[in-house]
Image 1 (spheres, one colour):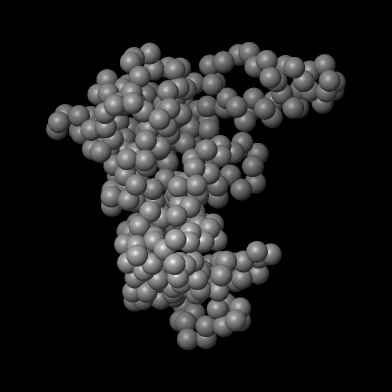
Image 2 (spheres, rainbow, N blue to C red):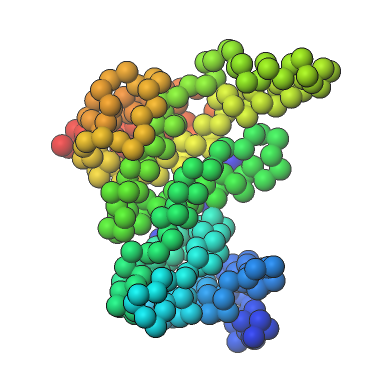
Length: 311
């Protein structure tokens, strides 16, 4: 499993003969842009055109692209709401699919937030919080039988990289760091593979008959296969790599308390930070995990030790 680093009229929108066909990744970008326009409920033409400029024109001003993306969303009257909901779905898909564009997409969102248009209507990034909530709340590492396993894990890695970089730029930093705390708890404070009794699975035994054992095995893989850490650890480690110092300095209550492996006081603390560091070290020793996962966990533990040692 390789996670690529996130570095540094319809026809008029979907085709542009002036593009250099040899440009890296151009074919992928063109396919993405075409898919946007062909959907049953496509984004506004200005949104698609903004993404064309963002993805295929490296020299275009990010302010120009941002202004174009919301041209039809900002109302004439400040008393009316911004209607830019169709922006966030393709924006999230671009983050998930194009790791090489990660930094540029962060810069684009910062430019979007800073637009003065509509008396600063985009300063609060309308509907972005709702999009983020869907991103955090509904992801579950797929089972190993999932045909798109590698693609979905890469998308999750890309999205966490983006969010960590966004927090580092001062955009919704407190909220995003709280979400990172949830991810750290989910990855490092739970051990479902140590559970042996699942009433919700066993309840189906009598009703399913001969199909039960296949169902049971599928559900156990989904719920408690330790190899799910191959998907969660690389993504959550990006928060340590990019925002480790900020996470170390967090204090006060956390948005979520798992109350599982962590038996210390609730909330952010240096003791909890040390517990997470030790859990990363433990992940680095698990035979069942991929070598890359173990190396990433080891590097995260080392970075956490360096941060706490420098404090």
